[in-house]
Length: 91
Image (tube, rainbow, N blue to C red; front, side, top):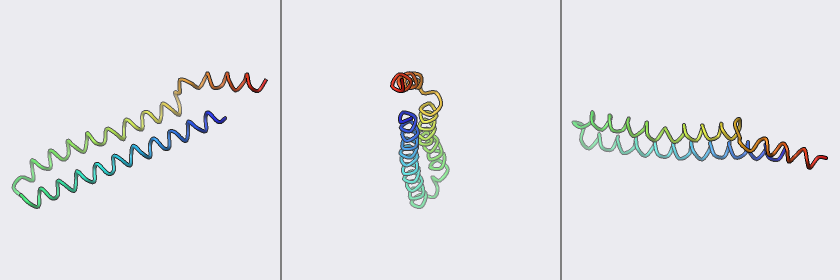
């Protein structure tokens, strides 16, 4: 059971770090966009468009982290090897 416990911990830590980086990146992007808009209100349309594209790119990091964590939890390629090893040790 240690293998599956470690898989759950790895998925949790991986998702936490992935979303932490995403949150920080999005916060910095929005901060910069607001500063740019306050300096030059006439360029707010271009700044908003660029910010939205950037936020979509940043958000993809969280989606990739989620996919990797779901693979670790539910489609782990080492699951069968770990189960066979556990059965052989139990005998």
